[in-house]
Amino acid sequence: MPLRLPDGHVAVADVFSFAGLADTGEHVALGLGDWVGALARAAGGGAAPLVRPHSECLTGDAFGSQRCDCGPQLREAVERITAVGGFVLYLRQEGRGIGLYAKLDAYALQDTGLDTYEANVALGHREDERDYTVAAQMLRALGVDRVALLTNNPDKAQQLLRLGVTVTESVPTGVHLSPANGPYLAAKVRRFAHTLHLPATR
Ligand SMILES: Nc1nc2c(ncn2[C@@H]2O[C@H](COP(=O)(O)OP(=O)(O)OP(=O)(O)O)[C@@H](O)[C@H]2O)c(=O)[nH]1
Ligand SMILES: [Zn+2]
Image 1 (cartoon, rainbow, N blue to C red):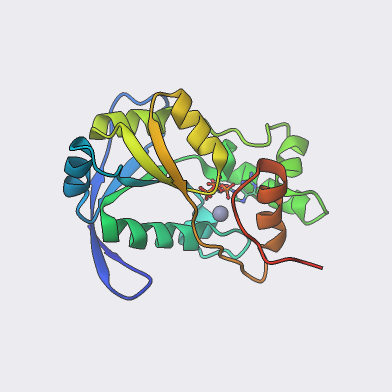
Image 2 (spheres, rainbow, N blue to C red):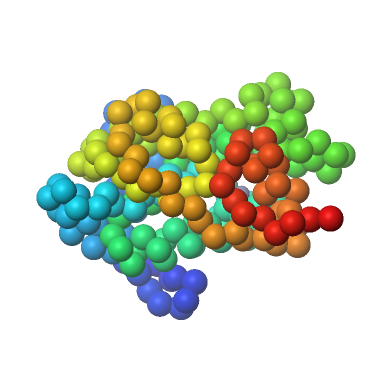
């Protein structure tokens, strides 16, 4: 599948579907760049392939919403992984696992002053409902047992480690500030220890 990169170049992705995953979501993996070579290098004792587990965000990924940083992170991931060979795992975990309609309700609550996590709880959900079992299963099916994770979220690495995936390092993404996503990014750092180095605010 041809993909247009942020720099205007076109990349090619091999798109993988899966059977028998732990939930019924249609999770897909994008094999990017020389992913075959990256797997061979890892098998020979070289560096682990770069992998981004990306949680679905229809509003950010597809519609370009500025409330979050998901769209720019996804495009950054495709570009960086294409350069070195690896995978994006596109996980159908919309709204940190609460679903799209609930996320839209959470947005309405955030407009009254709650942060992104408090809004989930006010709706009767957990702050973050994501479980990465399917990501571990997808990696196993792809023949990947060691990964360099492209993420700022320590919980992704911790869960994958518990699920038997060797995470050699967590590689942070860039900081994608927009006119509207400052409080959202700050809440990720404050509440869930994301490794995002935000500019100091007054
Ligand atoms: N419930 C809820 N989910 C949101 C909100 N904004 C974005 N999301 C979802 O959050 C998920 C992305 O999670 P984030 O916490 O932004 O980032 P992350 O994936 O944990 O961390 P990175 O790997 O560094 O990107 C996607 O599924 C989005 O749909 C919000 O305000 N409320
Ligand atoms: Zn988003």
